[in-house]
Image (cartoon, rainbow, N blue to C red):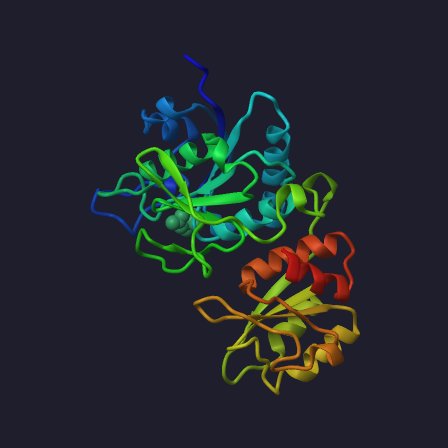
Amino acid sequence: QTAKPQVVLLATGGTIAGAGASAANSATYQAAKVPVDKLIAGVPELSAVAQVRGEQVFQIASESFTNEHLLTLGKRVAALAKQADVDGIVITHGTDTLEETAYFLTLTVRTDKPIVVVGSMRPSTALSADGTLNLLNAVTTAADKSSRGKGVLVVMNDEIHTGRDVSKSINIRTEAFKSPWGPLGMVVEGKTYWFRAPAKRHTTESEFDIEQIGALPQVDIVYGSGNASDTAYRAFAAKGAKAIVHAGTGNGSVSGQVVPALRELRAQGLQIVRSARVVGGGFVLRNAEQPDDQYDWVVAHDLNPQKARILTMVALAKGADSKTLQRIFMAY
Ligand SMILES: NC(=O)C[C@H](N)C(=O)O
């Protein structure tokens, strides 16, 4: 019998490690309670798929992830990926910011070994808890050679998504994770089925490298709406933001009351990134809605505001100017 693939499970907390007072509690519970060994022991089927060993990296709800958490996790993933005795890596994570971490790893970890991020929408103590099958599917995907070279993946609800595209689209159903351009594949009864491959630069093709990143600059998001004012943009700038991601209405549009402040902040050296707050995924084009060439602003194209924040931080950490930042936004 050939040896099983070796998969390391890095646990960071979230609802997949959550516990509620009763089996009827699907929404009221505490995240980040169950330790990694118990998570693994809770799914005996894992041992048929891979040799799984666990590490407790953090035990937090993902809404409390900071840039330091991203760096610590990324460096650990990169170190493990270099080891000959590691075939794949699974990261258990809260779902609230899972898409940000998955995209950060997509951009910065240079490996073609499978890296799979997984969470759950219900705590382990709930009826119809989704974490156990999600975890088995994630380990199955990480252990599978066919997952290599596809960038960082997110496995939820039997679907395999790219860490770049996927986003949490609802906070109550188990089919919460959607990609505007569709999933890459499915995992069904212990087998992966692929339908497409990512078109954007990632992992081994990336110009970014977690091992070269010591710190991430402050980049903040301001949400656009009717009756908008420039208060939040100016406040973030005063607190040291190096860039502001504008979560704009519609096509990343900017209120007439806000435009002068953004032009001023750009003149002071902050990068201004126009993204869209629209739910189905934005599609912001340069010089549509606003004269980006004239104002020297950048557009996030199809990246949502939270993913645009991640890419902006990573690019600025490498010293990108506005032209480079725009080039990067179209490539990743
Ligand atoms: N479903 C979840 O995991 C939500 C939780 N608040 C978290 O992100 O940690």
